[in-house]
Image 1 (tube, one colour):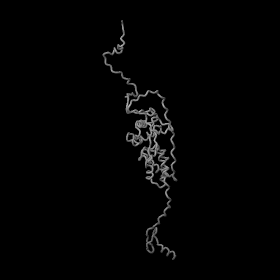
Image 2 (tube, rainbow, N blue to C red):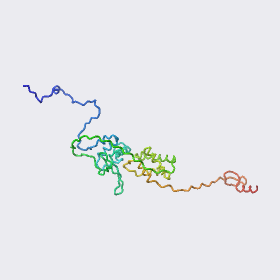
Image 3 (spheres, helix red, strand yellow):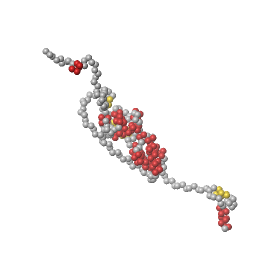
Image 4 (spheres, rainbow, N blue to C red):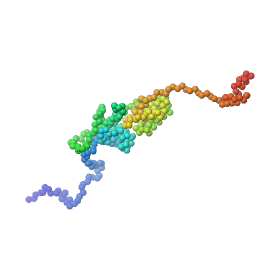
Length: 305
């Protein structure tokens, strides 16, 4: 009886018997990334694709958002700490944090402690912060430290719509000088442009500079030196940076405006002191604007005439 052995090798295998074929490789002509992942059981963080693949956030903001979500509660995430950790520099770090805050992945609020010290409270969101959400819990993103994740696969969700950018709040009105001379406004503009050399956060746009220049001119008009104005704007800057540097400067120009300079009566012009001259008639010395006769000789000549 002809019986088929169910465990016999297939026809393809029988043809390759005795030959050492390499494993089949994927088509090398296919472009795009190929993932070779290792299953992580410790030291990993779950990052939402809404952040990692956000269509409007820049690479610096996405990287900062992922890094901040991987940190434990209480870790320092101010601009100086992040600039010391990364190579992007304080200016790009500050811009990235502002992007995260604008799109709801970060919240920074200033609070006063019981000792009177002002601190900045930072909350990171693994999903965009919803309008009206205060973020008081400071909850960390989901993390697994010591056990492998054993969650059931979830059905793919529909892609989230990108969060609409909120309209920019206008800057507050700054003081205006009584006389807007070109020299005064030029000096005020030069002072504002130079602030970025002291703090990279104070790199102002042309529009913000034009808005703030009259406020600086009002200070200069009140007999305040440029050095004193610069010190008032730069002293005690928040260490975590400023969300809107132009609004911060406008607030200081308004609230710290000094009083007008006291009125001073114009000083009397100095008395004119003519040089000494020799009288042409009596040869006596007298003071006058030019050579001629002294006062006595002029009177005597008038009497005899």
